[in-house]
Length: 391
Image 1 (cartoon, helix red, strand yellow):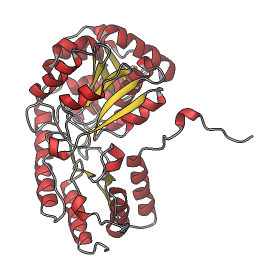
Image 2 (image 1 turned 180 degrees about the vertical axis):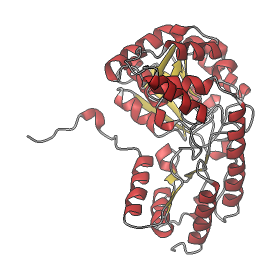
Image 3 (image 1 turned 30 degrees about the vertical axis):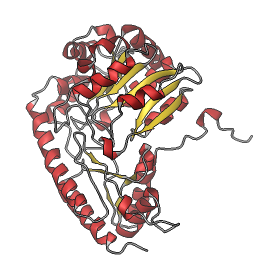
Image 4 (image 1 turned 90 degrees about the vertical axis):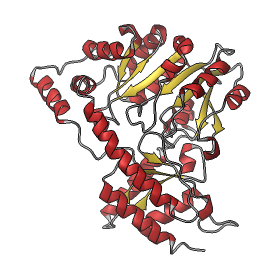
């Protein structure tokens, strides 16, 4: 019998970030020396007190099925910190599942979701899998990689169901100011059918003042979902815990979806996450300082390369420089960001992600979540390779 792929997968493939990471892994297996700056996974370890809490939970027998919505103590702590009630919180297997739950719970075929580009690669595919239609609005470096009220107003139609707002942004690091959020909220005030998904997973990795969308636009909280988790700030990517905060009816629908897809998130990971978010906040300050130093290193090095322009990211741990000045025209070998990244991987053994993966071509994403010596070596290889750039 011939395998038949579901039509819902048309146009959806493995994330380009994952594809590049796997290509780098294959080259390493062949004996190549590869430096990958392609993934958003901090090199710093999970904090010891978090690991200890997981161990204690396992020894205490907290290894049974947890409630689908999440361990009550963790949900209660998230609710208390956010100033909401318990029924407004769901804990999931990572922030990605929170987003998928929300889209599956709310989208009907043909519903539209506005996403400013550059956007995290999974947004558009999750929307398509849920039957929705991504509406991509390019937000170039010249406007700070941020959506303007005019763009938003022009894009809204009767089918618009969501606006996805990622602040701090992956891949650009852009952070929307309080005033910028308020201006977008003024537009949405005239369109009550449009909800806001605010992905704030990098909120604790901000190098300029950060304001939550919920705080800047409280008039929209009855149609807003805040997404967060422990993966990035606490170096807990593999623990797979994220959460959503929103109106009780939305959260109830998302729990229904989750109950049929994964049930509750890992019980041990939830107890570890509780230890993380109730721990000493000084740890987050220390880690943010480490990433800030790497940020300065990367931005200075990239801006020293002729043909490269890099704005300093406001948050997260990515640089998203324009490489327009490096790309040749008329079918040259380096005529696109994807061609550049492929050439760099083969020529210099450095893995970056092309901007096209994030909906904005002409850029590359470089992660500085890696150790400083790895970053320094990769930047040196990049600079050297560009001296040998093919015509």
